[in-house]
Image (tube, helix red, strand yellow):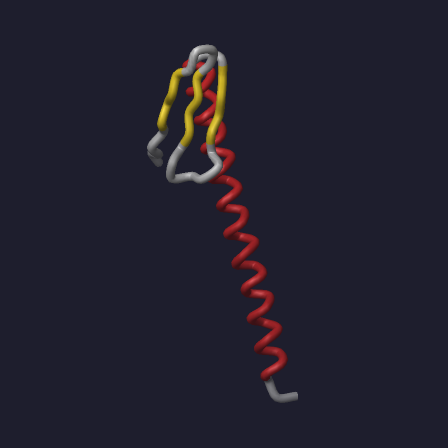
Length: 74
């Protein structure tokens, strides 16, 4: 996948962030370091989103099964 990344240079460092992945940003001393760090940060961010989705669906399924158990005749 490809993601938009904004790179910025300051007086003493560089930074980058992915505007469509809130909270995904890095700071480093060199542009090369920032390129490496933002790639790792995006990968980590996406893995976290995927895990959160798995947990959400697992919880959703668990709740749905509980509701079905409560509604089924005994």
